[in-house]
Image 1 (tube, rainbow, N blue to C red):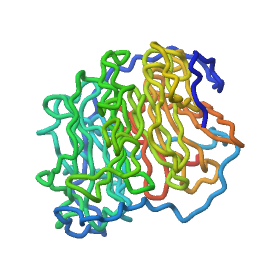
Image 2 (cartoon, helix red, strand yellow):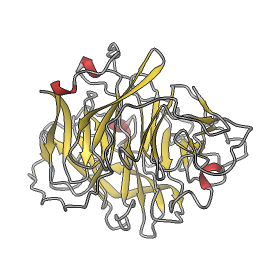
Image 3 (spheres, helix red, strand yellow):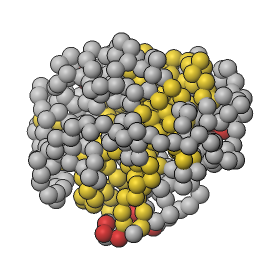
Length: 428
């Protein structure tokens, strides 16, 4: 793990990239959805969910894949692979998740407040969950932003979402699937875990993900405007500019993990890491448990942060003292180090980073490579660690604005286009 110097530093990792001006991407308006109404066959039905978790339950570890592939040591020839469209006609999708229940279904989050089900090659006409009555504006960076299924979803039918409400504030909530239909959630089952007041309409974060420790991790931006004018990212008495960590298997509606860095005081006990501007997607490697965080920059640098499995909390990623590896403003604190990103790129190349996933599917050439993209330019990078050295390379041109990535139950990787398309990486 490396740390930022208290003085401005030069770029330690050079990314050899073809420079291009940030693209302007007007919203073309997605095409109408044409969807069959029949449900897929043989979808496992979760057991009827309980109303509250069992007291003193042990958090559910996220299962690791049984395969133990050899990690790649170099990037494969991208010309031998292509991103194949598997779905179109969605309304501004921003997230794609699987339930880990063996059904093979994909759940796609539409920014306006709906979660759609893609199963057996079909986009079901009826949403899995429709929250358009409680999600406020989906303009700017607001809306329904994130989805995570409980590691024991097949047993308890629980999942978690992050959305901005009618007042523009962040809501972290739990819902249950209906006992009668695995393709229908119960909108009346909402249990709110957290409400976070947002001072501005941007930098809401939105990621919701379970770690290998079974705890729920939440990503929140610094509250918005520009430059973090309220200084939220560097203080520990606000949830903004943070990654939070909750035990959702205990407490009402959650408990504080005892090893959270501020569990005993000195800051909000939910906080696990801070110094983030707008973490637009983080993910845990399903094989190793390593954590990758894509943090959107201000006006010059976009960054990827990395934490090896087992990292403790109280981690400071440096915003708004640093933007990427570069000093931004203010005086660095001398009593606690800032964690360097492992990769960055300038706004000569793009404008807004979109974090992705480490590939763990069936193609051996891509094993262990982390994918991420830029929203404006459509560049898709691979990031690879070889003998302790991080290497990043532009591998593909998406041709669309990439809002998110996703992974199916077998570890195959997808990207989500703002124009309503979903693509999967495949051999030519």
